[in-house]
Amino acid sequence: MKLDTNQLLRFTTAGSVDDGKSTLIGRLLYDSKSIFEDQLAAVETTSKRKGHQGVDLALFTDGLKDEREQGITIDVAYRYFTTPKRKFIIADTPGHIQYTRNMVTGASTANAALILIDARHGVIEQTKRHAFIASLLQIPHIIVCINKMDLVDFSEKVYDEIVTQFEGFSSKLYVKDIQFLPISALLGDNVVNRSEQMDWYKGAPLLYTLETLHISSDLNKIDARFPVQTVLRPQSEDFMDYRGYAGRVASGIFRPGDEVSVLPSGFTSKIKTIDTSEGPQEQAYAPMSISITLEDDIDVGRGDMIVKKNNQPKPVQEFDAMLCWLHNGTARPRAKYTILHTSNEQKAMIKEVVYKIDINTYARNEEDKSLAMNDIARVKIRTTRPLMLDEYRDNRITGSFVLIDDATHETVAAGMIM
Image 1 (tube, rainbow, N blue to C red):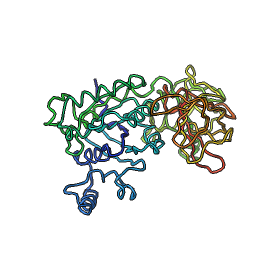
Image 2 (image 1 turned 120 degrees about the vertical axis):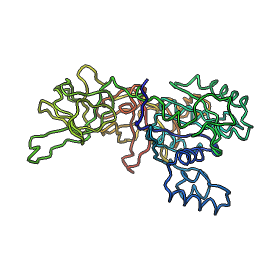
Image 3 (image 1 turned 60 degrees about the vertical axis):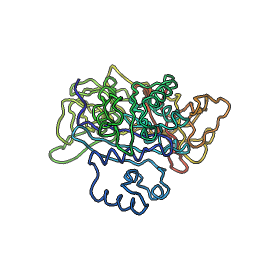
Image 4 (image 1 turned 30 degrees about the vertical axis):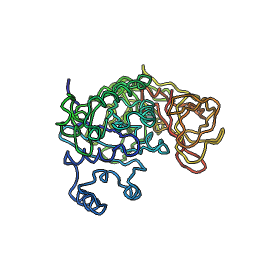
């Protein structure tokens, strides 16, 4: 099997407070030599000022001033690093229950989720909550890092017990791939280098696992979806008659000569050319940014979607979705919102809250219909005009949306279409 080398892998970290998420990321960056000298010098200075004997690895990700002072992560901290085999973007998300919304936003585009468990405490409620959110967001790969193994004498028995605990409740979740790793982020065991203290563990260390994770098959290559972001009319001498439809491929594969439909109008044509900044292309696939020209001069604009003629999404005005409420204020009954779905913008309302989910127990609450910050609920949404939708489990791009409050222009919710 060919490895997905040189591909970009997005992964998120989640765990309870002080489980060592920031230390683990710091160890990954430090041991893979992905830290600039000035960053290293700044962290060494801060570590000395705090009285630490060595480098406090967590400071590489605790970028906010409040976090450095409190020693906790209170926002999503994004970090980029690269190895000879792959490029990575890390979303370090908070562990507190009041920051559930940060995990939702940080994990929404992730290929993998690293869920940390303190080996001394085992599976706790927050572990279940983070696993549930990872499942809800359809993150294809979950790597359960059982951290602080040095504090339980690198015990294989403790590791096996935690694996059994996690498997006991994760069987209820929809997750394609779960792997387990015993690590010590502080000492570096099984992070970049294999642990000499845990020779009973025969798997690969974390960095190698991330470098070789097969993610090509995670993309939807069947349902061709191209949301149009803008129309290109250069009006220059070289491109006097050029009319291109620019955007990012959401899923599927497009080639010149393909018969396509433009939704919602339903007009049909064939793809004439596919262009990128690097020149004409023989095919385009997610997540490429491209410009498509058509053989026929038809009306296409921002918010339209170019799809294959024989494979089209459902145009619907009313649909069910799982909604995570992101805003400090509560949802107003039957209030008007702006819904952003790919490049399409419409007016919408939350018609009904069907039930809320207790993300600690997975229980459904059909009595409480209010939506406050961090609540996750199944709702019915109605829009003024049809949207071209796929279910989120089939397509994370055309199956997701955000709601914006028309009064304040703030983003109040993120949704996944069912």
